[in-house]
Image (cartoon, rainbow, N blue to C red; front, side):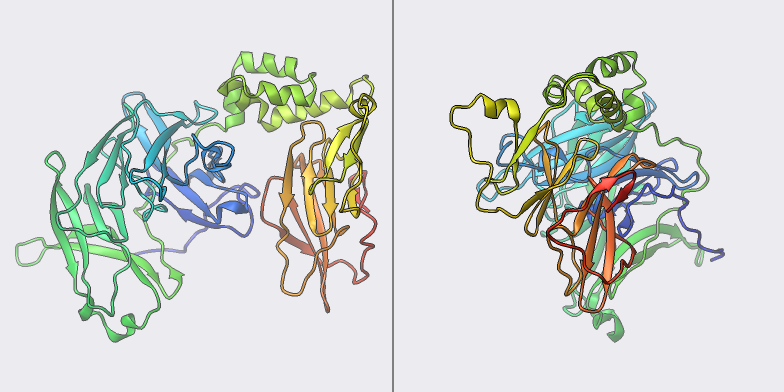
Length: 493
């Protein structure tokens, strides 16, 4: 086939975290592709991308969705699996990101499901779909994205049946599985404009066949066995591969003796090497849409509320985020956080004095007014007497208790545990992690120094991200672990 030089995706620098694997989750839809970042805890989740323009739109709440966090606090709304998809509603002309949640619990025979929709460029956050999905399970095919065809997204379930979601009307339906298909690791794709189900991991050494089924009659749910590959016919070199999977990519017809037999082009993985291919996206100027922050502040009411709320105490603002979905979306934007911080810095009110109570595992901040009003105030020290608290850095503090570190907001009481990923033989102790602020990115930054027997290293990451990146080697002189770092004028000392 004719070809040319392979070009890298012209994504904007700094949008995707370093050290993550970017995987195309869907085929191009009018030039748009849904990207999945792996691992998800590295600080990113799903993006919508236009490869022609290089524009990326991060989808909100996809790294760790709120519905998949905190089962002990939200048992009624908790789900443990999620599937994503990208579709288009032709009537309204809207591109929609769709995610289907599932709760696969060993205590229940029926899986609970839920569905949320995000209209690209029009919605700041996810909202419930108009219809409710049937209670089916997709635990085994959890990583597969929904396949879009003829105005509907198709999600493959564990029993090989298919949930359909009409993107325009947001209603659900179902399709039966191919006859006689047992539970297996399956995939879903589109060939020649038809829906297809295929095996993902053929067992080459066992002689099991690799099959592809095509939905020949959509309305009647009638399947046709399109392709059958005998595992015993594979060459000896292929059977020695530790892992091999196939994916049908494209089907074409080749003229031979007056007939046009169907040919299928396959791609896949072998020996840990991934081979990615998809239908050519072509040149497309379809916009990916506005970010959540741009959508929120396009509303005059949101701008008015931001001016009102920026002067309120942070604890009151946190409570107001529970009023409604629109208010929460506005308060959680970076723009409002900057407005609130700027308003707090120019405030003429008397600053609050807080004491850190180290009787808890992560420390707790107690206001001076609360201590003065108590007849028997609690002790401010505990078992862990070696805790350190940094000076305030744009409203945040770093608390270090031995080898545990936490970024805290004393006003709202929120905190985040830091889990430094150390290399072999490298030990990070108290005092080796500092908290600063990057004025260019307008983000708080964590800096850690680690020392081994023969080398030292410095790694940084922004608060809210989960991937560290190396920035150089500090001098071999070890810092004093009993003295926490200090931040001043853009530098950590």
